[in-house]
Length: 185
Image (cartoon, rainbow, N blue to C red):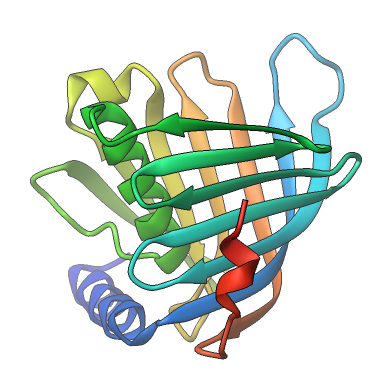
């Protein structure tokens, strides 16, 4: 991608991300583990409400929900509930912030990431590699794919082991009311 194309994409993404107050979307997730022949596929619904409420609700092949809310991670594994206080963990706070930023697409912080821009067919793909050594031990790079409207359509998180998680978003709706009850654990 040319410098001008990258600059235009960055501006479009930042403008859209600043305007996003809520996101609801279906998603399909593929977990690639090098030692398995086939990727592990799961699907569900994402809900995001500004500034920092996120729910990943998995529906297949099993019911599982992860909610990021008030410096805690709430987990509901088919009725078995638990939570983790992330308020004291700098790494968990970083990961929570990255999840929110990646869903919105706004990770363009050159102090935190080495950023590379690519044009593939009618999409733009941006690679974000963390500069923080602790974070880089877990996540080698994020690949975020944007459509022509500069909206995130796919996020791929590649671990240092080269295993990865790819999430494809479909039926995405922005800025429609989301009931607070969605984020209850």
